[in-house]
Length: 448
Image 1 (cartoon, rainbow, N blue to C red):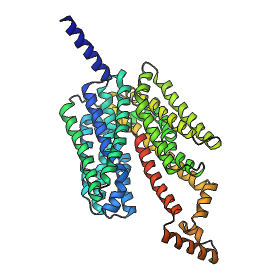
Image 2 (cartoon, helix red, strand yellow; image 1 turned 90 degrees about the horizontal axis):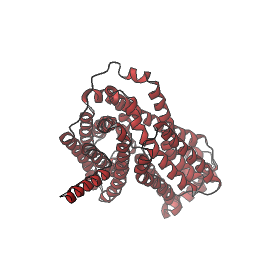
Image 3 (tube, rainbow, N blue to C red; image 1 turned 180 degrees about the horizontal axis):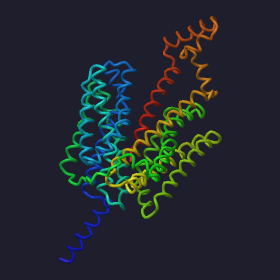
Image 4 (cartoon, rainbow, N blue to C red; image 1 turned 45 degrees about the vertical axis):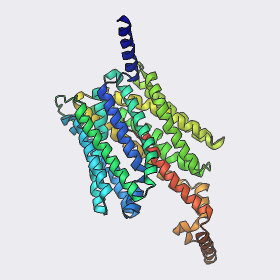
């Protein structure tokens, strides 16, 4: 009998260790996060392809539809904060999941631009509500001393879901328009299943007494405002710079191939999946401010490695992206717990929505910086590309003399008939780089 008691105790201890100290309800939410990102990871690389080639929308219209899903989420997130605080995080997550399910099911069935825009609007509202509500729910379900663990597991779940979803999505998408439509339907089902399981199994949903003042109180919270501003800077460098500035720099200045750039982004995602849990354990019992400072230091060192790669060896880029991944782990491990500590329980939804908005602002800052850099760099690589492919730039073609234009036309005709390997390889590389960039944004931009 004593042996049985010891065995049961040892088993319970082992299970508790395997559960990482998180409750059953928290693991249900984490599994739902994995399920959501699994479905979205399968759809994300093929949204434009499906709308343009499968449904006949122009590339411009398809781009607007895809942009609405993300852009509207930026606008909807601050509005979701008061909804979370009033109706509870669980109810808001479920509502956001249902809206996303309806939106993606609508995109699967859409045949015209207005239909696709309507579906994208519904999905965008759901996306804006789901992300801050999910962060608020994790903070509410986890004790303060375990919030960093809940955040770490959610990061692993989201990155793993995106990676596996992208792989499975590629297999299904190979079946043409029918396969692409099936991916959208499957993504809608994952959102709906998550919402149903959440409502049925998660009972706790804190609804503190309302606190007058709302966002005015948040803006008067100087420590939180400072944290949000710091987050904008760190996201711009750690996430945005290595998504939108480093890949073009590696391609144009260092001569890196599109395959190499895709491998760099994959190495970053793998680093996050592997290092997130150990970093969370390492951060236990330590102050959160210095932990975030370690993340900032990692980003600075990674930037120096990128510069050194241009002087010494391009292989240093791998060390840079791994270091960025480790910095991301330190940053995200403490960010959500720090926000939850600063937020009054009655305003936690608003605080999570505001810190989520700072992510978008940081990414937007990096994206605009990358555009300015590309436009004003005047680098030899950009000039060389323009010289090699003059007919791709009408403004440059008009500067050619008639004889040069005729010669260029004959060259273009020969390439068109033979489908020259150099032009095709360049175009293919551009497509691969575009997909790799999208995957990098998704894999790294898992919200708090």
